[in-house]
Length: 231
View (cartoon, rainbow, N blue to C red):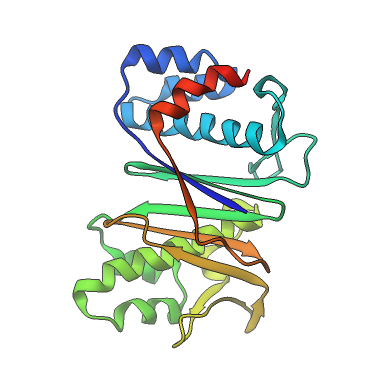
């Protein structure tokens, strides 16, 4: 298992266009539709990050990478069923997790939102209680902690929003052990929380497998500059 992170920087329009010319048409069209420049950069970096890591891990050329999607829309690498990956981005970070088993990763930039209203609508009673039992000044952090755990689980399952957020509950006991509960039964998933930087929450979910503590930080300019050589 490997976990990667890139802290994004501003890029000139020319560099965005030049790098986009080296990725597949579908992803290029998606990037071109974004109005917000930062959305363009995050999506572009996510694409070249996963392609770069696949090329390095499998010793294949970028031109031989073909992505397909399952019926729920989760992408996978055609012809390599033993490689699983997941990408997430928020704020100034793009993160990616790769493994030989199903994997899910979620990162969120902490924003001042009506977290209690959202939690009541989408979280279980016990999850809501986990948040509001804390002092007011840390409840927002606990909300995002729970949100990333739930999202990482859904993404690990690979079924998208066909899994209702209220259909399962994340249980964090007094020893900080984390489990998924469905119909009063614990499921065999493993979680790890990361404080990648102040103002962010991140979680990784795996199927019954220990999760690495190590985050491999990749510098954005190096990622972009080395990308053409992978083809």
